[in-house]
Length: 477
Picture 1 (cartoon, rainbow, N blue to C red):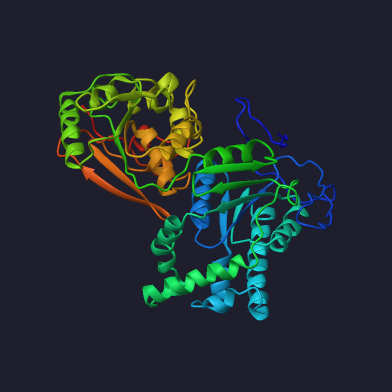
Picture 2: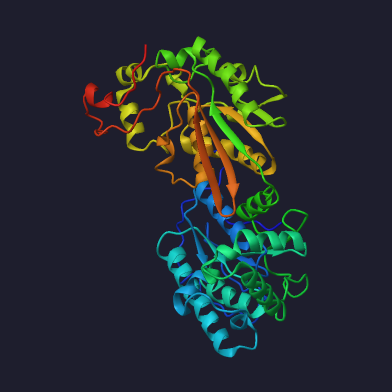
């Protein structure tokens, strides 16, 4: 495997701050064909263009959305560029299948112009707006179109990684057309049967010119092929750490129907007294919630589902009454608060007022003394995300900070919002993956508990008063 030039921090993690800009040291080099990998001098942490390849109704936009969400969650400034949207903006919606015929020269010019407009915005994002990863969502079904991408990217020292989705399973294709394409602006107000017939003809038109990624023709390019969603994978010339992570992620996602249930443990003794961290047991009300959780899952008709907890007492006890095998994950343990373990916010303000203020200034990146930050926790939870993507129905019993990170991934929440997502005690969140996102439902169990939510105070300066520092601390015993 080739080695990508990246910066590692002290823990060996990928350093994601994009520092690259085109310079005289990175000259433009012409690309003679899509099979050639033009030379560009090694650049520290160069930006990446992830280009989708494949016929219509092969799940490319689904993959693009998932990848973008994942990359943003791990901290990369990422945007999607959907060429279909550029085409609709330029020439309007409701184009019949004839518009996509390879011999329709006028339409070819318009479609190419849409592709060029998207590439121009992609370059602007990666080279001038601080972007680190761009997902170029289009069919890119010919070698000529892929050469266009390479010309615009590699000439500017932007790495290119192709992801081709191949599907010959007619049931999957038909389901994709029904669930996604009929809702497209291209078919708004069109009779469903006519829309399906027209889209199937559109696919046939693309097939006339379709050129798959080839082992010989494209042997110098970085690409991965996905067959029938999750049936088989092929990878070629995977270049570095990030592309390896992307391939691993792609090998874990699937489209099977499922539900993911998330909840915090029942109220703990530490919760009652306003203490953070610790490894206390459940309060009496916490035990009541644990019993109610069993009834709730039965009412959901969840006879067969996996149960995951952390290794801390309060989550294990919350799952005690559930039917099934409990799998304990150390990665699901609560955010490590280091020297502030089992302290109240009032005690932290009294003993570490500067640390308390610094955390309020940047809660996502702040790391407790000898403890963790939310950023650290996201990296710790990455294996959990991979496994959740692989599984079917799962109940995860975890902690406040952990649940915030998981919800942020599935709902695509930005970093600055993540540490303030409300995930109350005795509330169950049901996540149902849908075509291009995730549907969330909340179920509050009628068992009283304390409120552990602390919003960001108005004053975050180092010289603030005790009252200003503690203005949003929730009440406790």
